Image 1 (cartoon, rainbow, N blue to C red):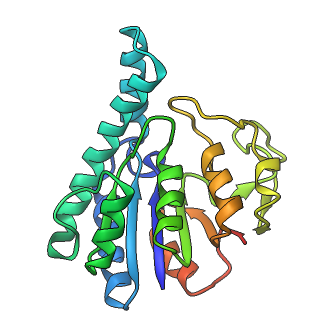
Image 2 (spheres, one colour):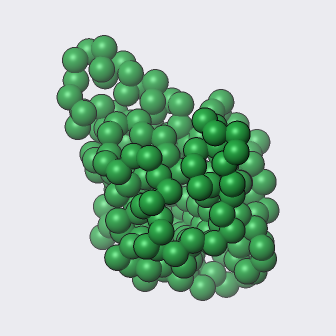
Length: 224
């Protein structure tokens, strides 16, 4: 199976959790050893949003703010890549062409951000679309997708299953802005709606959830 793993910055970088990052690397190695093709996309979390704030204070436009945030996400990606050693490609991929070639070479693909206007959610879905992935697993700071934001509404209900068409109906924001924090960002929703790649959203604070999602166990929210 070809799997794209999305590790949210809100999970590993709010605050920075190196022990958790190491556990993700170990489980990624295990998934690779089981014969799967693997891509991992990491977000920049609070560090990226902090630097977006610095960019705003300096009067930088949204594109420049995004570029700074991308650099932050690539720092986490580089740490992760180095931890994987020879199983990973020689460097953090910075284009979809590099991503495809890396996986063609039989290595674990590691990426951070890609281009202004896209969060690492979108990067994960674009990579999945380019390499014809079978599954996207998003490791989030929530244990699935809710009918409304559970941080704002105590009566929010977790949805076990969602169709691609229903995705955009459950999110408040429908356009990108630098530093957006939504469980699946608007551009990623658009990619999923056109590519129809099965996606599972799980709690990222337990990396073993990735193994459960791979086995088809009842975990998180399944989008199909």
